[in-house]
Image (cartoon, helix red, strand yellow):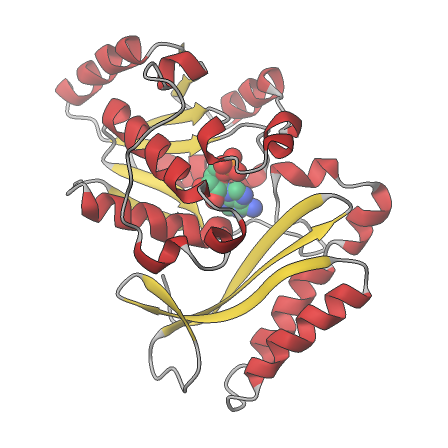
Length: 287
Ligand code: AMP
């Protein structure tokens, strides 16, 4: 696996790749890699000739400085994992490399209501930071296809919007959420759960499944979201939202009438043991 810390070196290398008519797949990550990340690399390997993975813990997308400080860094281990799935290139830039202009910026992307609901509501500024770093990374890598996880559904929609705003030719491929055997969505943050909290955490997936089971049995399934919120609270979680939304023109809207054929999703965020966990399920349609 080639490793690059400087964008100029990576760009030179990728120019040669493009000259040899090979397609480029890109998987941006923040490291502390798990099988969810590796499933994206595998999807990229199936669909493109040369796969670039980046590891960069992006400071501008952390609205909570404590979360940034506590974010796990396991680069040695990550390199082993990336080698195990035959990743072609790792891009491992520094903060200075990605933000020579400094972290403050007047840049503003118009993400519409995507920025004010769900994660946007509880993590102000988060998606501007995501937009800024993904835009920069795409300018450097210029992939043919970009691979992201449905686990971060709203992030996928934000990036889809970013691609539209910037008239980018890059194709976004949304890959399914990888789960532990007990249903907990894999996440770098799971490692921070205490053993007791780790045992409790799959209740999130169970709550989503229950909502999915009740979907299609009439609009009263919407009450299921409130019930799930209360039930999680009783179990010791601090839920932030359990919301059922409809996808229209790549925007999410609260569902308040029968959705017809529109794509419908349920999304959830809850704190457990000082760790913020998110998950979602598609109730009908696809992204
Ligand atoms: P992160 O390192 O958390 O920024 O995630 C990097 C990429 O991996 C994003 O596109 C995530 O959506 C994706 N990802 C994270 N967890 C999972 C998972 N459990 N299954 C599939 N993809 C995931």
